[in-house]
Image: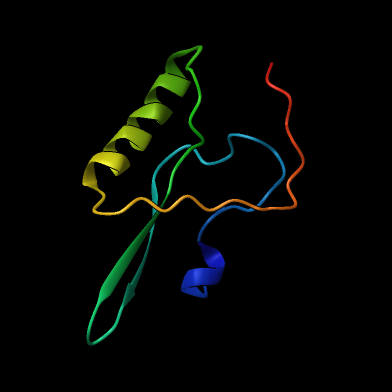
Amino acid sequence: MNHLIKDNLSVVTPKVQTTRHRIRGIITNDDYQIIYNDTPGIIKPSYKLQEGMMGFVHEAVGDADLILFLTDIFEKDIPES
């Protein structure tokens, strides 16, 4: 998202689950407006904090007109624990 909005709004780190809230990046032009949502990764919650994080994910999905999944093609597989 940072590259798309040309600003450093979202945290970029190899550490998982660093985004705890929904972060919005907005681009407005004369002809359009795009709102990007950076959400926590989708997981099966194990405790209350993770349940809250999944609430932000569900809220963003409910608000979306279009869902575009972006990922790093060079990212290595992270084993599930």
